[in-house]
Image (tube, rainbow, N blue to C red; front, side, top):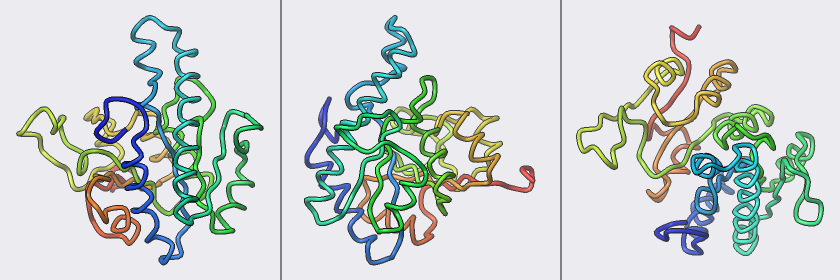
Length: 225
């Protein structure tokens, strides 16, 4: 959505693709999970009286719109990309299977995972961790609007304190709203690290991939073992 109030910003699409293009030289495999808060958010629909399962289904369908827009921009920039939807829609894109995702990644294609997990009540955060585990990703990156995890919303509270490192238990016990509890629990149970950083800072995605310490890293600690 970029600086707009709603919908898809061509400027933001181009920015994201420009951030991803340099990764080709690093010989890394890229899997992307997109949300749909710019179009429709299931939780918001439910809070206004809509049936939660129906609202979540609408939100998952909206992620397919974003995924197709991102695929188009990637391919126009010279990057081969595929959209794999957890909800079958054969005339629009391919249906997700782990084997198909791994095959596309092996061939050097950017894989965009759409439609969440295909199940209501699960966020795209959980879908991101799930897909990361299924493709054996080395790192799960949450690219967001803030430069890490804070004890409270830094966009509202100037005195918010930033964490450079957290354990999964820290996030769950302190109820830090970086990802939903299901996503954090899934990452904890499978010891998969998550890096949270500001995607609006040019070069941050490359830095995260190269192992530089930016944002906040969430992983196991002594209390997790």
